[in-house]
Length: 398
Image (cartoon, rainbow, N blue to C red):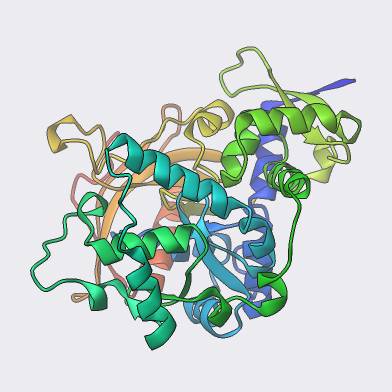
């Protein structure tokens, strides 16, 4: 049996699954924060702080009573969360760690294949020295092992000990204990991961089943490729075979894209409620999304569902940029309505708003502009830059 899902319903299902259909002003305590992260599956960590860190903005967008100190406690004291890799560096519920253990051999194969292609089969020759240092002396920052004469230049020119630390972290011989500033502090897993989870063994079959089922639960509906891309734990082929093997517990759904083109066949869990009444209207207020928000991480899926094209232009030469270095999407109810270019200057307490672009067909009504201003004020307070300064021509398409 196949089921047709309208574009409006598809967007509302996905927004609800991504934690964006509940009130962002409800009180959130530490336990509630853990629930939010578990519901999302992960939150991406990124070093860029044009306005605020990606993980903080992702959580603030969903609940504006979010306290970053609660996140630190869950990570560093309660050990309810851990850091590892999805499609990028991410924060994950500690309960997922036994499944991540089966990712480690895959990561090691990836590292060795990449280095072999570069003619560096012996890249890990001196790595045991780094691991021995941590075993003997405890947790370290990468800079503590850096040779005095080494000049770093990004991941392509890490000093040897930094390469060793990242290799051992991604392949499971080290864990991230905490961060100082934004720099990772590496330590042995037995000093970071609860023993019951560290020693828990999961079969390869259970690993694939969990990865696919949990991805589909958080996406609502997806193709095998989208299922595989969610965690980056399994290949598209493994996800496709899982869908075929579990057809009795899934249903095929046809998702109408934003542009009215041919519906796209996807899978959903059999118990997914397809009644429009089951999915609430998202809050009316405008919300500013991080460029790394999980709602928009899969750019092709986002464009099909929301009719919204977006890319981060920080690596695009300035004369070739369509918008700006680091531009933030705007969410209003179940629509992506525009984007804003802004930067926080913490020393002066200023949030500088350079430009606002509204999508085609979205009008700059008095009510909408007031809602955008209200959200700018909220994020400015969160960032500690309460003074908002707009360029005179900040509304680009007025």
